[in-house]
Image (cartoon, rainbow, N blue to C red; front, side):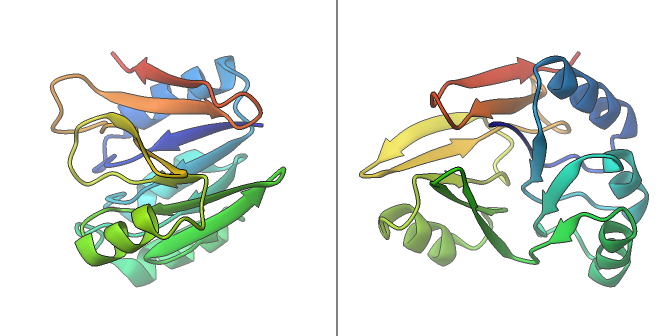
Length: 161
């Protein structure tokens, strides 16, 4: 399955729309948002997607975000999410809780750990866990997200103009 991984959208509606269009072009079937959504109105742009969200350190209106996420039929995992996709275990967080990040990165329970927060794209292996930061759609020199094919492990970093 192809998964679009986005983070740190910070209310950038135009970039979110372009990202989702690029994800569709790449046959992504699911979207994971690694936090710093910011305003509940951004969540509506994910309508029609199978989408999973976690909160970031800039997501102050968590009640509003939860309501918006439920309103589009998506899933809110609050601070930490995990899924089993076709036998591949993955976790996703924002990344501002360094203790949680370290526990997930070194625990060996997940094939993948996705996170944002730093606004820098990264893809590294830590023992059995591949850690991917898709980059950010705001406050980054190059705005990016990632499309991961869980069947092949191929991760494409996609630039959003």
